[in-house]
Image (tube, rainbow, N blue to C red; front, side, top):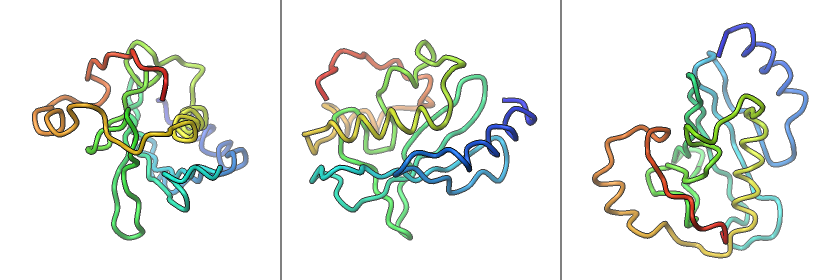
Length: 148
């Protein structure tokens, strides 16, 4: 992401963030942190806030980052691994397009959480987290379950 483009996006993002999405930091144009909340009464995520980290390069890398102060857990979801990796087609190298931006990605993840009814990790989470050595955008997830 060019510095000029990122500066324009940053000034615009301060004015246009949807409810439940907050810019926490964007000290440089290589990494931004956003807090995200599910705004409906989904009992899985009620009164919780989650931290997303965007690392910018050719295609952004987006993960959940856990914090203890303030408390920012990694959400329980069948497409979110306990290391913060998100199995979502628009985050993969093949799914990313230039029309996407930080707001649209946050809104997609917020929507994914809102529609979830299963407070569980993906099958094989423990094994994946223990063995994976790839960056999130280099993992070749299989996108076959659109039900959650």
